[in-house]
Image 1 (cartoon, rainbow, N blue to C red):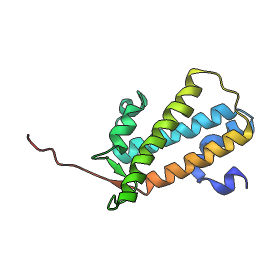
Image 2: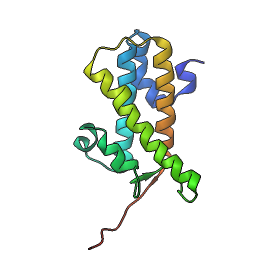
Image 3: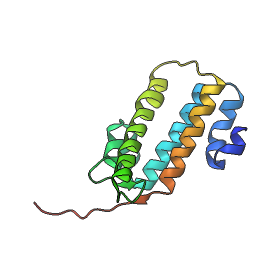
Image 4: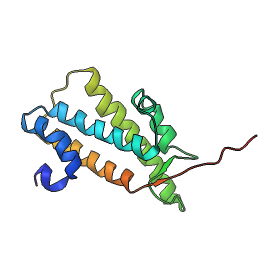
Length: 139
């Protein structure tokens, strides 16, 4: 399958020019920037709050009170899924996004395809997730 057949149109538009030119590292980074934008919009965060470092990911998806829940968190399995989603996104930030921002990386088409498709999955899960607003209480 081609990227166009498998990923969302908005992500496809963000990555395709770089991907078709063989700029696979840049296509991967474009996908991570779309993921970042999706998180920022869904969690109602300012730009600087999410671009600075991946600690923000834990604040948005981490326990005990995630701003974005990828499921209802009613069962042990769902809680584990939420915790795993937090770790996956931290891994995307550290192992994929930041490593490519700070160093030249020679990605090939297969690697770029796999990462972009996975990022599309993450974006879809986030877009279909639930925003949580917690009341601030005085201690």
